[in-house]
Amino acid sequence: MPKTAKREPSVISTASLLLIAVVLLLVVIVILLLGFRLMFGMMNGLTGMMGTGMFGDMMSGVGASNFSTQVSIGTSESYANALPQHVQRYANNNTLLFSSGNITLVILAMGVQRAINLTHELPPPYDSNSSGNAFVIYGLINPTLIVPKGAIIHVEFINLDSGEYHNVIMTATGPPYQYMPMSAMNGIVSMMPIIPPADYSGGYATEYNYTTAFDNSGAYWYLCMYPGHAQMGMYGKIIVE
Ligand SMILES: [Cu+2]
Image (tube, rainbow, N blue to C red; front, side, top):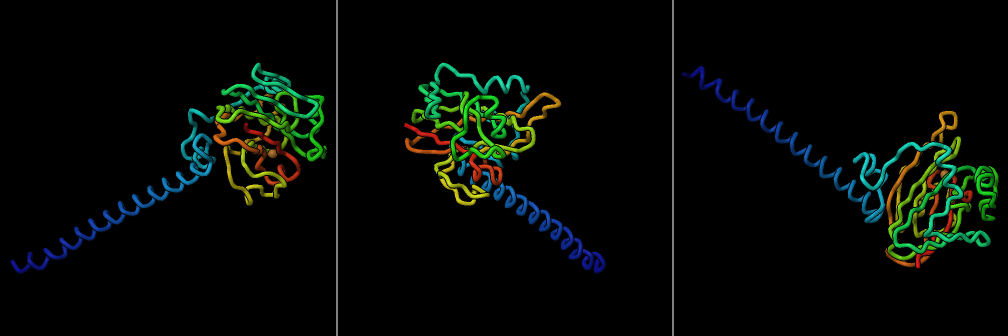
């Protein structure tokens, strides 16, 4: 009897130590999961209700309203001068007027010289450095977009550059932009990952789609987040009215 009485406490303490360890482990896991969710929520909140989060994308993978895919170079280039019915193009003041509440916005990214060759238009003066980068939208280079307030905008972004990474985000913060444009930015409306250059030998480009909307009228801007690109002129104006 004394023998077992002596052994019993050590058995109990081993079992309870094990239990405490398991409980602690569970608590740590719950804290980590909550922290992760909180961080995820903050990133999504930052990009707005209908925008997509760069970090959210990494964690949630392919979503319904945002995805990346491969598209042929030929198809991509055919978008450069396309003009859907709901768009009016004013080349003389580099402006596109969208009259629909449901807008498809095909945005191509590339070097300035390629943009000129594709559209036969000139970039705005702030983006005239031929070593810079530009957006081509429906036949114009970095055009001003006039869109109705509350319109649903389906962005189809294609990187047609042969060597550089690009993206397109929308924000209330206007130029001039710094080398790292996000360092002085608020009022972000939409966000997306920076996507790789096109593979011209393979014949395809990367496309990334997302949906956004402007709930308030006013002046906004679209720009590339890649360090130095917006600073050198890779941006354009959006007027919401
Ligand atoms: Cu860029």
